[in-house]
Length: 390
Ligand SMILES: Cc1cc2nc3c(=O)[nH]c(=O)nc-3n(C[C@H](O)[C@H](O)[C@H](O)COP(=O)(O)OP(=O)(O)OC[C@H]3O[C@@H](n4cnc5c(N)ncnc54)[C@H](O)[C@@H]3O)c2cc1C
Image 1: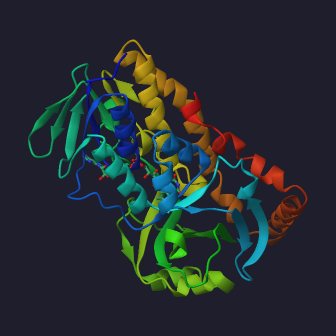
Image 2: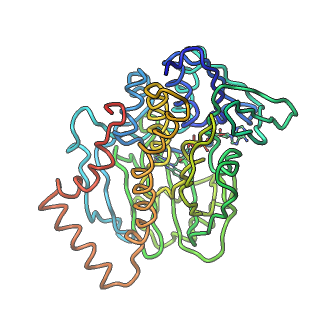
């Protein structure tokens, strides 16, 4: 089915919505993106873009621009919190040369996606909040300002609090994982190498990596606790609370924590992967379909993969319905496996019982030294999957 001239409305100008807009436009669709915010401003935070996400950016012709704004990662280091000593090292140099791993500021990534979308003729309409969607063969988006928008196809890329997801699936309540996370960016006070460091402690871990040519460091600090913060990205906290919770961290970790001046806090919730991703001529992608905990750093990357596959599936199918069904069929198993892997990951970093902690760290040290390739190979199924190659 040719997408040429098809009127497609994408709700949400996040990483998923913008990637989908560029991909759909490249196949000839007339794409409008509706964004509720008054400007496309991303909260200040980094994301890791693994090779499977980079493959999508490359296929969309954005490789050069992306390389200019991103830091290429050399390794992932697992470190013990008190002495800040190295436990294990995953050498990202073991990845094939054409499958690099990056750290990037979300705002910079969204900027290049929005610029590319506009340059290709995508209309991005700000201050357009979708209230609900009629999920039929002639879908209509009802906007909060009272206007209605008809389209041939409507894509809900509207994140965690999607308006289209409950239309397709009913309302599902997320549950609190008893973990909260602080997020901050700080100046590069320790000359952080181009690696992602996971500082592991009982019931806590902290991930740090450099951004913007090494000018900044991104910090995500996760703590297990019973009280919870409301779900979302915009909750400010006092940096003293973060420092107090991680006060036994030593070395570079301590110095980075001392430099935090501005910090956001949020509760980590688990949502089931939506059983239904499409109905009539509507579909959901990214966090709208399958929000994930951040412990595999795959949320944005999965949204990019979805965008490519959705476009390709529509392009190859005879009808919109068949294309959307093929999209879900091609994505669902992989996405579920990644979400489940992320769900199971935090406890590995948070081991509290000293003998277990000692044993696990010993094992990691040995494998890291004697069989570094083995450590990396466990992620091949995620990183070396290239949706753009079918
Ligand atoms: C701490 C943390 C660290 C992370 N690290 C990584 C990482 O390293 N790598 C990675 O790949 N992922 C990471 N993620 C996950 C990633 O940020 C998300 O999975 C990703 O942003 C989802 O993209 P999206 O486009 O689906 O949704 P979003 O980015 O949430 O975008 C949704 C957009 O829709 C708009 N919108 C919402 N509702 C409406 C409406 N009703 N009408 C109009 N517009 C609307 C919003 O304003 C927003 O612009 C991390 C997440 C967290 C919390």
